[in-house]
Image (cartoon, rainbow, N blue to C red; front, side, top):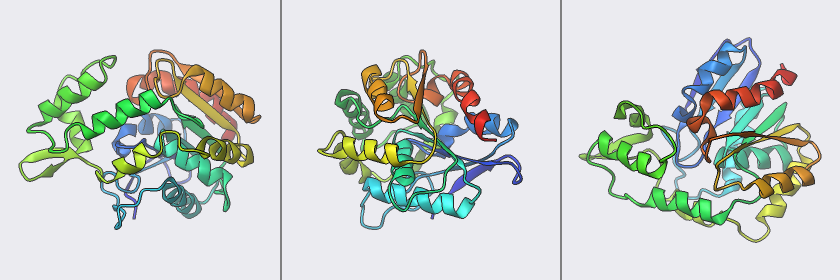
Length: 267
């Protein structure tokens, strides 16, 4: 079972926001209301193993399982939603859209994810996620760790915003996701055959695709984004200057400005 936040009117066209690995649905807390105000019904779930959604009982977090969850969510919503997926959410959506049984989407936005990551950027993220298995003594300590990891992003005025990404474990604060996922993440850096599988899914996805790259991303290099669009005829790309891998979190207003012209085509 997946937990989700919803913004907007039920009569509005559906738009699904899928967060990245190690995040929660609260990654979209600023984006969701803004897009709802533009006339969409926004559905932002916690992916399996994240936030308050169920964890995999056996600790299996294969990418195909996330794709199955996307298919089930899209089928339950109906109405051929537009799907915006960041990182893990984007990979899951791409497989759901392009591999049988194909999810009935209207369009797909991939946020700083393509067919192949730069392994250096991926390792940096996983190393951060592994760094504090015992958690943090306080919200302030967790906020400091995030600011050190993301030095390009202005530090929030207070640590309260990070609370939604943490859960209490005894007298400590730990990240709000299943730590068993990290083994799957490390095996997903660039395994043999995965790049061609994702490109094949993108080519078979019968939907327009927009790739949004963070201008400072160390996960999706410019040449990787260019290659993806060269190999997928119905894909186009935009870049959000000053943003790293977590584009919406880094430059939310610029991210919205970048995707709105594309979204207007599907209302």
